[in-house]
Length: 151
Length: 151
DNA sequence: TATTGTTATACTCTATAACTATA
DNA sequence: TATAGTTATAGAGTATAACAATA
Image 1 (spheres, rainbow over the protein chains, first blue to last red):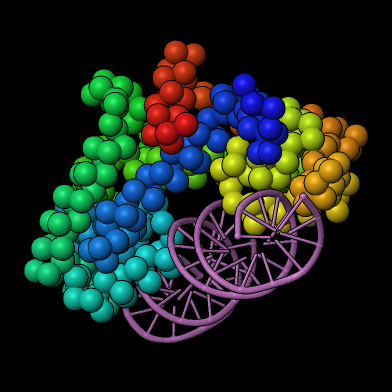
Image 2: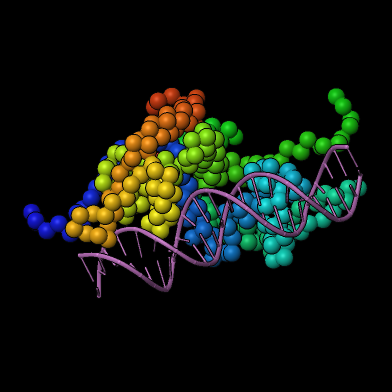
């Protein structure tokens, strides 16, 4: 054993955080976002942008307010996301027939193509996050998260 | 049944998000932060500030770099948190004997008193988050989150 | 030269309020 | 008056780089 004591190897007592859902939710979510950004970044996608594309594909002609609520983001923030996606030619906003206030959203062909690649990247992320969890464990985790999120 | 069709009750297809760990991690963490801020706010605490107090109490004379790593925040951001906590008389920073670069952290009496109230509030939050989960389910959730966070 | 902490700054995600235009 | 969307702005939380003081 060494008697040198530079870098005293300090291993603090982490007990106060060990059983805190709040702490581990924060860390797990950070890993999730980091992984998503790493895998989606090369496609010029973010978690938010991918969510928009996913839900528009599943809900053609969805309205912005409905989409924002489904994604659990504010309409004002969705506006910014959509403006960029439209400028990049990935989605189209069309006035609703008979109600010129409302916008109906659709993917373009380019949007559909990019979504395909984004969804594949996202599937990799999900695999990476759940690595080491058996299907039952993963399902239980999802159920618990949904319960906490009141979803 | 009514034939009126204002507010068309649109219920979009949420299937693409339903089984995504990334999505539900984000929502659960948001609920966690919201709840923490709601319960800690009246004490002028935040999740980050409470974490600092908790770990200093468990580790008297801990160094900033060690504390930052334990909390998984950057030293530069910890500096800001600590400056405020010290200005409010909740902690003290003392130069390490024999190494005037390093700071050793301690709670003041006021800090200990506030921590007591903060910890109680935090315990309520944990109860609220885990409400409806049996102890085994909560333990499994914690283990899964820790696994994802690689902690 | 390396370590400890600090400062300044920037970026992302989120939230609120005030506004336009339609209805 | 109420609704759909937009704009501007602000606040957390997080990250990086350059720096001062000390070792």
